[in-house]
Image (cartoon, rainbow, N blue to C red; front, side, top):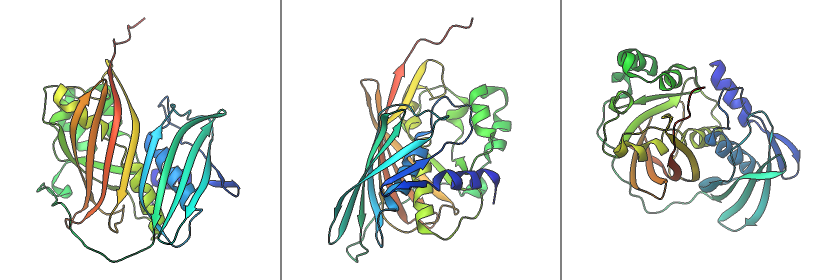
Length: 290
């Protein structure tokens, strides 16, 4: 298993402090705030550790303050309800005495029922697409420095965009993109690990979709971008160490906020999860160099 994936599993393995209290840490990075997917994943771990015999089927989260990557995060779980079919938990993430994040999670006992799903987009297989490193090499000088660093750094999740146009061009594009992703090494068989890693990965690239029609990206110095809320629904079983297709679109941008949706498919076309997110996409004046 790669060092980066081992590191992700370590940050998802929360320390239990009390009956409903857990403590998590952040990896050492150069980013000024905690990655939102990390907080979603850790909060789901905390909630799941208070529930036996039921899988999460949905979560709804709000990002309240930017997280401090140098400080531990305390997760306080409220056991709201244990019903006959559904279990509900609320998780609040706390740093420096303030709530930085809140999330509700619903768990459901396994049941049979009606079944239908949306079709998976017809896209090239991940093996037919360049790796992030190859994509950066192909782009050459057209790739901004910040984006080159992002694409080439070692990470626990590998992403392969179906199209590279948005990375090398700032012309307006349709508000949709398809991205293959998977964990870089084989994961343990524990279903909870795969759900929490998918929750971690689901925050990546989604907000950027709302910037495509405007020729902008979250790395641009004249944009302030941050996740505001995030919803995720689990539909069917999956493994995060096998390729998953993240089909994303954005239906709206207004009031300095962008709204994006996502469907996550196994490569056999099975829809395993759906995602929705609204984020801040605020134009700002670029910082002047001193």
